[in-house]
View 1 (cartoon, rainbow, N blue to C red):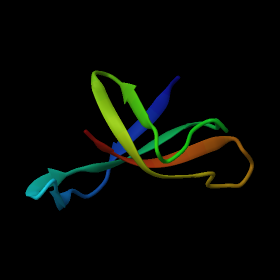
View 2: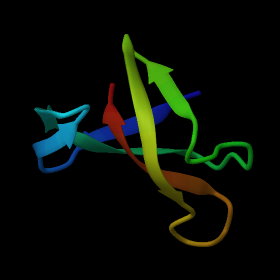
View 3: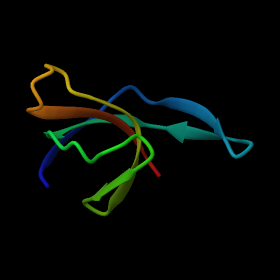
View 4: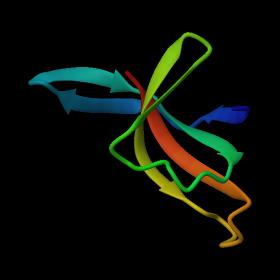
Length: 70
């Protein structure tokens, strides 16, 4: 599966009782009906937790996923 990954503005978030850096990214890939927000993606030696996903043009051509590295 090929995807375009671009970084979004970073920040900090409270995770497991500790303040940790969070660097969300946008992943764009060909549409897949089998992806859900409770899943993870892996590629290029990194694992991403899906935060949200949407079909930006409503045509089932591409998926735009907001994710964060875990």
